[in-house]
Image (cartoon, rainbow, N blue to C red; front, side):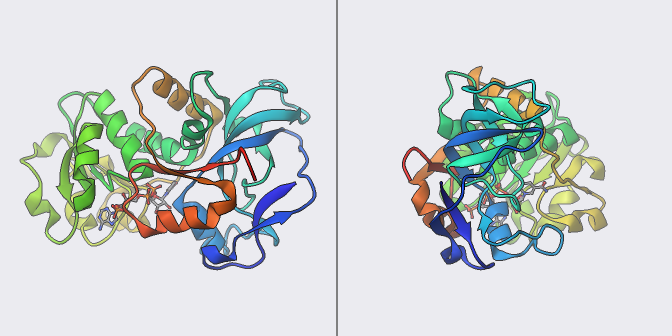
Length: 305
Ligand SMILES: NC(=O)c1ccc[n+]([C@@H]2O[C@H](COP(=O)([O-])OP(=O)(O)OC[C@H]3O[C@@H](n4cnc5c(N)ncnc54)[C@H](OP(=O)(O)O)[C@@H]3O)[C@@H](O)[C@H]2O)c1
């Protein structure tokens, strides 16, 4: 079996394609033949060793976390899936996912709708689930305004659309090169940087909430705009708690992946694959994400190794 692995923590250059023993299915898992994957910041952070203190990997370590593919074996205690099902799954990044065969816990898997591409499917788990959790936390309603900081990114792209579907007005904070894209998602774009609050449109303070996916210098001023600090959430910056807001850590669940997939099929949610790389170029895909300016997601095609 081929896999993208690393033997030490470091830059994307530590990633390499290796031939290793097949991975096997465990109890509660399905084993899939990988069709597509996507890359997330947590992948390069794990490979860099930033999470080593509380989620260490075992070397050689598999890279990656978000996958789609076809079930080839079923573990004990799995009743929701059958061999031959196409599924979407989230694998903890310290377990790793970019291998020809991937064990995926059935609890964090969902069936891929027939009309959805494997690439779109693989872009949903981490970013989509985080956006969904953020939306549930701020609970937008028609008449509300949601500020999404980092609106053009993986999470931001989904959060903007979900808030719009809930009927809210959305202000999307993004880079100058992303304003057109953020507009296409349904948000009013505002460029990030110093004095961002001075560039915001007029807001109704009693109905404003914040979804932050970046943190940074502006966080304090952005939290202050929320009607109630509990309607200011960050998935990027634990420091928000000291500002009165809430830091969210996502707990992936298969039923939530299914909800996102349904939203895609019904046309409520669009997956924007900014760029797709062959899986042997995972290193370049990490570098693309690190370079910034990605609109939506970076995908990996595992059709050929
Ligand atoms: N807490 C959790 O459970 C959880 C779960 C998943 C992810 N996360 C974290 O959430 C963060 C975002 O993930 P993602 O997948 O959305 O990453 P991403 O796709 O890289 O998006 C990040 C966005 O932030 C924007 N940005 C850069 N500088 C900014 C600034 N000064 N002000 C505002 N926005 C700025 C980027 O825009 P440009 O590229 O155009 O500059 C980009 O669109 C990551 O740190 C990730 O690790 C947390």
